[in-house]
Length: 382
Ligand SMILES: Cc1cc2nc3c(=O)[nH]c(=O)nc-3n(C[C@H](O)[C@H](O)[C@H](O)COP(=O)(O)OP(=O)(O)OC[C@H]3O[C@@H](n4cnc5c(N)ncnc54)[C@H](O)[C@@H]3O)c2cc1C
Image (cartoon, rainbow, N blue to C red; front, side):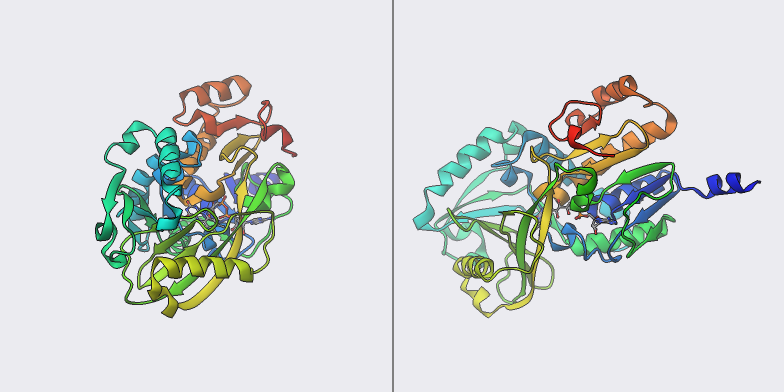
């Protein structure tokens, strides 16, 4: 074999750039399908540089329907079914719970409730609403909250998982499937591979200027003795809040939503707002110990929808998962992998075949060609 042949033989089928949530899922799935995959991540194997590291990882398509696009709600509902199967194939355990979301409000903010309900009903598909939205009264809402809230809604089909366990288990899954992972390796110019899949989240902005960051801040606290059994959302005109209980009395309290790509530490104002609101939900949070205050930016496209974009040549970009990354990533990653497979096989080799592929896809609105006139795609630079 001459040197050129040797280089070609060593070249991976796919270089996945960005090993946060989506990059890990895509690399893992493609490796599982028998492809040679290398992953490049600027941060460590734990995922500490990713938005996914900071996220609360609630899987709440119905609660999110209040403000999310129908596409996102659909992706979320389908991904919720997919997560347990996916986790079962990973070599490490991941806390996954499907015990619903509880929505509550203080008496003074009762005007928020009909607004929330109206939006939720207007934006949700009937199959999610059917048995998925239950009105509760008093202590029935959540035993841990006693009689603090006179009313509440239970969205019994929703879930959550442990984000950091998921990142770690995916890293172990990549190793088990033979993916060569280059941790602590920031990428400026794309590596040598037959195909590139750009999953850099907000780090992909140089190639996709329409991306923007929406800053989110969260607190992680530890407090035994409260015993919330599911994520709680507090409706509030200024401080909407969620409290997501993880294993071992750990609570993720979040999250602010501020336009801008400010990655600086959490502000005093945000801590005061988040923790005061949590304290108002349950005074037991007054004795909680603050383990971490974290901030990151959610990678967001102008229409607040995720996108899988083919550049017409060797590159796919998967981005724009905004505040719904964990909720929708299994379906988004699967769609990207299916397109990647179609490129490898030659099934997709131009605008026409791409159009055919999209017409037959489960989520056609996710798929875009860089040649197309979509708000986000024309702003791609190569
Ligand atoms: C405060 C907060 C709370 C959230 N809560 C939820 C929630 O409850 N439910 C939910 O579904 N979603 C939630 N999200 C959203 C979720 O975290 C994101 O949608 C998701 O992480 C996006 O996945 P991603 O892989 O596209 O980006 P990321 O997870 O950010 O991963 C991108 C990766 O690319 C790497 N990278 C960037 N540039 C380069 C480069 N040049 N070279 C190499 N690597 C690079 C980064 O280090 C990073 O690891 C939340 C987000 C935040 C910030």
